[in-house]
Length: 137
Image 1 (tube, helix red, strand yellow):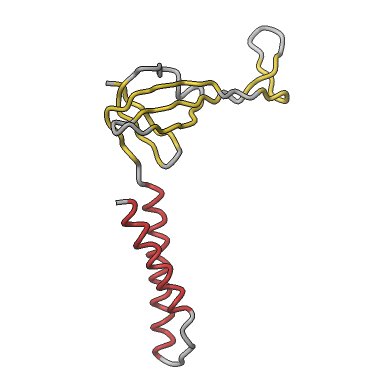
Image 2 (cartoon, one colour; image 1 turned 30 degrees about the vertical axis):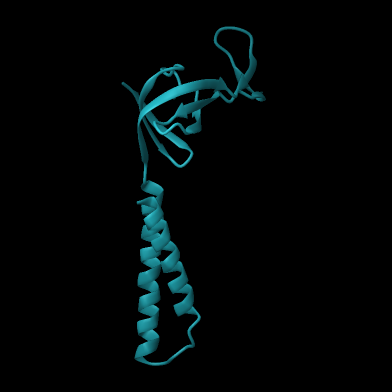
């Protein structure tokens, strides 16, 4: 579905450019052209929004690797009743193996990865390279 919407979007952008490059006419044709371009622009914006809302759902996914990608941030300090120490950005890179054998690597925050462990199976929901959720079986 995403590929089809992308093709429609490209076609609409080409049509918009073609109509925009047509010579200027006066009278009713001028206003019809403006109205058509405005409607087409609204449709293109709606397609962009729809494409950004599409989520990928993968079933029977297995977590193969969880790797910490913490980078120390010397300007950030964490203190819990002790001496201040340099903080980190708290990122984890998780590799998911899809049912067709391909792998998807996603970056998660430490909070998102709390309940995950290597070998877990479940349903993965993501949008492009953005992790949304993982529901274990």
